[in-house]
Amino acid sequence: MAGIAVIGAQWGDEGKGKIVHFLSRDADMAVRFNGGPNAGHTVQDMYGTARLHLVPAGALRSGVGVLAHGVVVDPWVLDLELSELERQGRPKPKLLLSERAHLILPYHKLHEELSGEAKKIGTTRRGIGPAYQEKTARRGLRLGDLGDIDLVHERLEAAATELRDSFGEDFDLKGTEDGLRKFWEENRERVGDTQGSILAALEEGKTVLFEGAQGTLLDLDLGTYPYVTSSTTTVHGIGWGAGISVARLSRVIGVAKAYATRVGEGPFPTEEPGEVGEWLRARGGEYGATTGRPRRCGWLDLVALRYSCRVNGFTELALTKLDVLVGLPKIKVCTAYRLGGHSLDRFPSSKAELGAVEPVYESLPGWEKDIRGVRSYDGLPKEAQDYIGVIEEVGVPVSLVGVGPGEDEIIVR
Ligand code: IMP
Image (tube, rainbow, N blue to C red; front, side, top):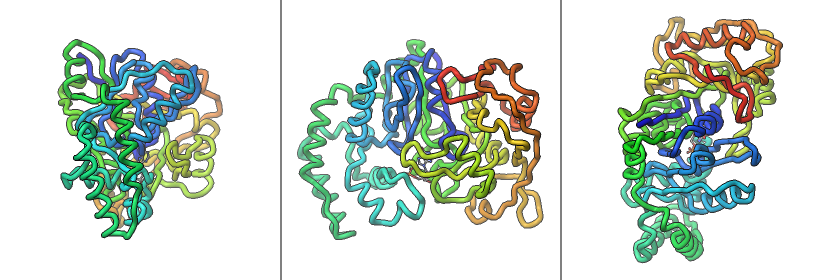
């Protein structure tokens, strides 16, 4: 029995897609348990580049992909994504969808825009927040409900009235209903008890990858509230969104980029708005996989990473995009915060405090040698090894190092 969790250790976009794809060589099943099509997991392989928003990245190779009940599913996005994978000539992944997973419907996206939520938080505009709001308000529509035409109609009518009363707007009720009927006809065989299927796989001794979306600092409870997403992005999301105990995990891998990025609003202590940030953005191709937005870039923040390790209990770290740093004369890394003239020994929960901290930096020498062809830790320049050594002072070993975007551009330590 082996459950392996792959969790974003920062603000998302750490390169989880690549790590999951790499690990999926030895996996039998890949599970998404949180978020929805706000995620954008990029995989580069022999078929080309796949940008996955709902289909688990690990499913491209493991053969079985699961969208567990914690995921919010936009049926139209899922349809498009499956057609795109087919167009690239990839083998069809076997997909299981939880009957308990809530749906993202067209009026959720309208609600997100009209309420001002999209702008205030800088969301991905995929209807994520409103879909989870409806779920917790106990009036959402779940995938398993689609077989009940009367229930679907009743729910859409109620949503239309709510939208009209709140914002004086309408959505295409008939088109939505027709789309949902078609989706159900085409996918009903895939919809079922995913909690049972995952548990059965684990009990048969299979390897199951749990693929986190977004990152720890975007977690609804433990992240930089209110500039967060609406789901549980940490390892605890596996219990919350797949119904599987973390006691079933043999590895909890935190994925951290060798520098830091953030999209959307919210405090970002190590942000470099000037030349360094632009350099990282250009070199690292830091534009959102879902929205195309330029990402805010800065130095690696070890205070935040230490917090992330504490919250998730990472057994190891996967460090991605180390190659992006090649050519920088000096690499800075934040080792502590100062606030009001004092050092701060915790990651603050208040947006005002996090917005006001001053990062304390250690400056390390960079290196010039291209590392994309390196496949062993010893083959890395000494400066790169020293940088990894400083990162490991958070108390968790770095077991995987990404040295390029390709599927084999990775060092296993
Ligand atoms: P939402 O998830 O679309 O509601 O957006 C809430 C916040 O999470 C915004 O700051 C988004 O930019 C951020 N976010 C959501 N999904 C991702 C992701 O996959 N990568 C990075 N940031 C994300």
